[in-house]
Length: 74
Image (tube, rainbow, N blue to C red; front, side, top):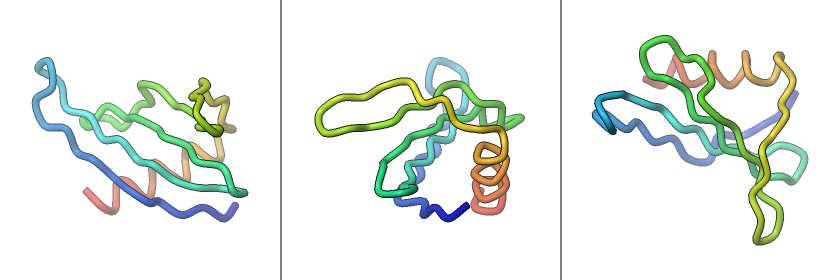
């Protein structure tokens, strides 16, 4: 799978929790995945189309690759 992380935000302290959000593109589509920073479990994932955001149903392999990349960056 080919993707490119375009942006990553580490939110330290939102509501007592810490989160990492990675925005990436794959096949000309834009996605956003938010992980719990402590264990990198997925909190939510979104796909953006035109002016709409929809819940993304990403395959486990994609999530694992993004998780590994995020882990290296934090």
